[in-house]
Image 1: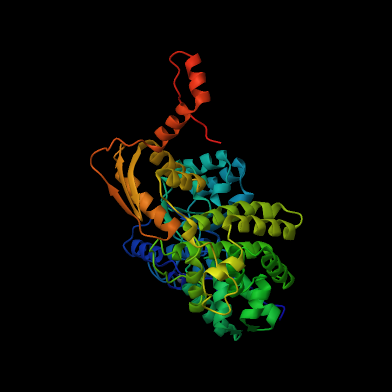
Image 2: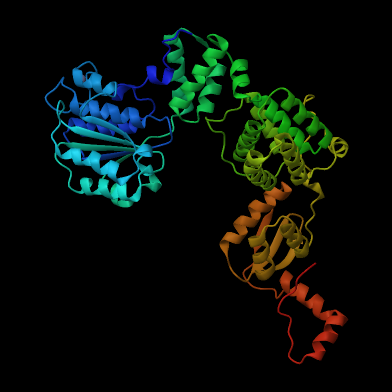
Length: 509
Ligand SMILES: [Zn+2]
């Protein structure tokens, strides 16, 4: 690496609106506004880090001050004195202020006092205030004063990653632009182009990994690419990037989730050890497992969402997730997700991540609560030979013959809303096979829809819910319980002791 090496993010910083990566809507709106002479006095750019807020601010400053035309232009030349000075951050009329280091009111007031003087070399005095949400309240007030009556030659360009921390009084005086997370495909195209310019080898799979790890940020992605180029001497392939990101292959993650859901603790622990020994970062692994859970949920047949183009798994991996999904309920997936989310801060705070991770695996397996593999293998044929363990219990064990069965199932599944509505309002008149006839005292159409979906998810069967129009005077589950209790001799005794006593509630168990 030569000593004059410039980091890629700086070297390939967008210099005009056309080369801004992935911000098409913003570019169109902004260039149209400039072309039609509608220049605002204050702009605010918001978006996650590395999406081009400061670059856009500089391009806008160039557009306002470029000498290649008589007025502001949507296509600044990039070569005139003003354009070059602004690109280098050295233009006398374009002030770049980092709010993080200028939070005090005196500082801000000093800077703003100078706003009243006319620009020296440009048409406009441009104030670019980066991370504007960091300003103190008094500094914001000083800024607000200037924004309320801005001199004609002054333009403010504010940038922030946290728009919610910017006072509404400021926001209401700015034209707002949201810079979006740059899509993976757009990042890939950009990185491939840069690799070509830099004459380095970047395989498509490696590029994909980098683009995903960048999570929408051009700058983050480029600094990863920088790192990968430095580590590989310019031959960036999938293994190298995976190594660098300390990430397990997605296939490994699919395997691992399958093992967890199959309920074999010993195998799951051995796998966790193996992945750990191979150098995977456990926090990253957890992120990948959450990614898996998210996609498995989206792909779950009960939801009927269909496949998305963004899905990060290969056709083969998708087929395996579909296979796993046949045996795993939506409810289980959502509980697994909850436990994983709760584990993120735990993992971050743990002094021994491996221990924390092992405990997480055990908790997940407890949720999955699968019957032992031996039993499952008895129950069904394993279709693919490399699918080590079939997943999830066969719902065959679930039997619903009475209203009480259904109430118990709802309760065990912690479906509190459904349980409460069902036990209070529903008079079940018959359950035959997969058909439930009932009268609904609350007459809530949503109840039927929700219960059908829940039953399908729970039992894998299509249930027919037949709502009858007139009550057959059957008891609700709650009334049944009360009757049972009342007819209990001990309770009857107790009630007779207190005149006018009635049962107002029963706590079961
Ligand atoms: Zn110019």
